[in-house]
Length: 212
Length: 212
Image (cartoon, rainbow over all chains, first blue to last red; front, side, top):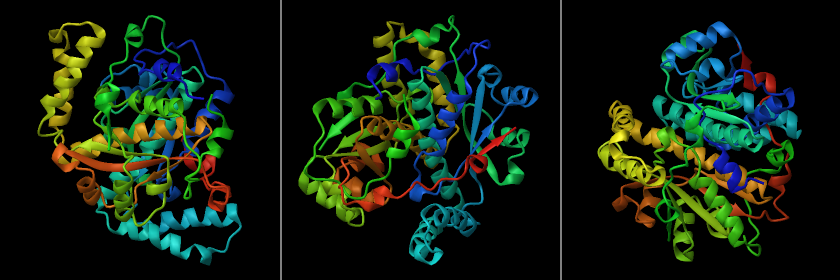
């Protein structure tokens, strides 16, 4: 159960402890939460890039205004979305249908209507809108990763502050028709990270919620 | 802890049981998860509209291609984002700074740099990009709401399939400078909802993750 204690424990960590690592099971649990997150039509318009290479991490840090999390977090995942989802819709939809045929033991022809529905939705979007739509789905997975991590008593920091084009070049994403969208740094907070001890600032419930 | 069982239990429910309701504590827990979700700079560019009015629910259903969840889910929350965040950046930033001054007992002047950083980020965005940015943040909260709900053993369905302009008119959001972005329907699955029993279709871990 996600209690208020877990929600309050979770805070964006600026300084990670470089001497503390995650277990294999913990990493698996976090990866499961990303992979099993929902998305529009279940299409999963995303890729998760786990960056372990130390040199690449240093390059990412430069593309991310020097933020230490890029280097210090034991687990660093770059969330990317396809840049050609509008142009190659059928390819992505067919990959998904193929998985569906396998997992649910159905005939491909029984999925024609569903496939056409997805294609119809993406057809109505511009190139930019299709990418923005994919990015929104990736942010659901980001929410899942953040909350799953907090539920394990592990810290994290979501990072938007980086130059996406540079990150795409560093990681070779451009040629894979992928675009970096947000980064999730995961590990344990440094005891001396006083930023983490500050009380959370949020709108009051009366202000955040309207009832109609 | 968010186990794989919880992740697999969560599935987008098409048919809610109209005889089962949430407790006050459960609703509070779900609302806490939305309100305490993280966002870029902690700005929380979102409003959550809880729609209880039966007539409004029926109108929403019409704007949502007749989907039954709009009417049948005991809890229905419309996620909205400000449409004027680009034009009235200072207003939103000052509201946030004011909350920060109160909660953290700091001088407003000590926050000048932080406020300018947020303003600078939004200044570089177009009107459309600023809305898309706010929407991405709202999708983090969506992820939090979905996972918290699942952790309580409660079902949910995220809904993008509706006409946002019509929903904005129905709920009077336009005059509040708000734009509906996604809907979260929450309740219990109908035992006869066989869609809910289908195995989840996801990319394999090898396909979803790249390691560099």
